[in-house]
Amino acid sequence: MSGTDLVILGATGSVGRSALEVLDAQSAPQPLHALTAHRDVAALAELCRRYRPRVAVVADATAIDALRDALSGTGIAVTGGTDALAEVAADARVASVLSAIVGAAGLLPTLSAVRAGKRVLVANKEPLVMAGELFLAEALASGAEIVPVDSEHNAIYQCLPAGYVCGRTPEGVEKLVLTASGGPFRTWSTEAMRTATPEQAVAHPNWQMGAKISVDSASMMNKGLEVIEAHWLFAMPHEAIEVVVHPQSVVHSLVAYRDGSLLAQLGAPDMKIPLAHALGHPERMPSGARMLDLVAAGDLTFEPADETRFPCLGLARAAIAQGATAPTVLNAANEVAVEAFLAGRLAFGQISEVIASVLDRAAGGTLPAATELDAVLRMDDWARDNARAAVSGSKGTTCQA
Ligand code: NDP
Ligand code: MG
Image (cartoon, rainbow, N blue to C red; front, side):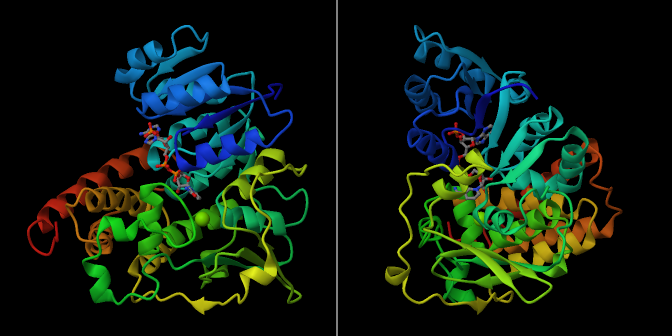
C-alpha cells in the first residue's frame, strides 16, 4: 500500500463531520482524496470548499450535475453513482478509508477498500452485521488493517494487546463487556414505549448521532448489532460478549482477561475520541474533545440489560446463534422497520415485531451461508421485501401515525 490520503465515506453525516473536526485539530492533517455523500449536495459542496478533497462523490447519480454546478471553479473533481464510491475507496493514492455511511449502503464501498488492502476505519456497523465473516476473511486475505471506530469496539481494541489484528481471537481474553447507555427509554415501560414518537426516540441522553442509529439506541437494537459486530471484529463467540447498561456513557467497554483483570477505556461521550484514536493509530493525536473530569462525572453505575422490555437485543442474539445469513435478515428488516417508524408508518413497539416476523419466516427456509456476497445481497433483498410486507400488513392496526 503506497498511498497517503484519506477518504471519508459519508462525510456529511454525524461521524463524517466529527472526523473532519478531528482533522481541524491537527497541525498537519492527512490529505483528503475524497469526501462522499448520498444526495445532500449543498452540505457536501460546503464541506468540499472548506476541506479541499481531490474528488467529491454523490452516491445518487442524479445529483452529479447539481454538485458539479456547486463546485464549479474549485478544481475539485465530481463523480457519482455507487460504483464511484467503490472506486475512490480503492484509489492507489489512498492509505485510509473512514467507513461512515449509514446502513447496508456502506457494504460495497467498504468492501472495495478492504479488498484494496487499505487501512479501514469502521464506524458503519451494518456491513459487519450483514457480512462480517466475509468482511474479516477478505481483510485477512488482503492485509487490510481494520480499526474499529464504533465507541465500544474502539474501546475494546484499545484494551487489547498492541499489535492485535482484527478478525483473530485475542490471547487470554475470557469475555468482552459492551456498555450500553440504555438510550432515551431506559426506564420506560413496554406500554409507554409502544407509542413513543420519533422525536422522543431520537432524543438520546448522551450522544449526538444520525436518526437511524438514534432509533436503534432507543430500541437497543444498536447494542444487538454491536454484539454481532464484536463477534466478527474480535472473533469471539457471542456467548462471551456481555451487555451491561451504564447510563453515564463514561466507560465505553471492557475486556475481561482470564486472570480476572478487567481493562476499560473511559472518556467523554464524544465520537471525536475514537475517531482520533483510529485516525492516528498507533500514534496518539489531539481530538479536540474535552478531557473527562472524573470527579465531575461522579457515580458510575452498571445494571443488567432487560431483554423483556428491549426484545431487539434477544432477536440479535438469536440471529447470531442461528448463523448463516440470519444476521443479514435481521439487519435488513431493522433498516426497513426503522425507516417506517421515522416516516410515521409504524409504531415504535412494532419495530421488534416486524423483525421477529421476518426472522421467523427466514427460519422456515434454508438460509444460505454469509460467505458469498451474492447470497448476502440476495437475502438482504428478500428480507427488505418481507419487512415491507410486514409493515404494510400491520398498517392501520396499532400504528399511531
Ligand atoms: P448519518 O445519518 O448522520 O450520516 C449518514 C451518512 O451516510 C451521510 O453522509 C449520508 O449522506 C450518507 N448516506 C446515507 N445513505 C447513503 C447511501 N444510500 N449511499 C451513500 N451514502 C449514504 O449517520 P451517522 O453518522 O450517525 O452514522 C454513520 C454510521 O456510523 C452508521 O452505521 C452508525 O451506526 C455508525 N455509528 C455512528 C455513531 C454516531 O455517533 N453517529 C457512533 C457509532 C457508530 P447524505 O448526507 O447525503 O444523506
Ligand atoms: Mg456504539
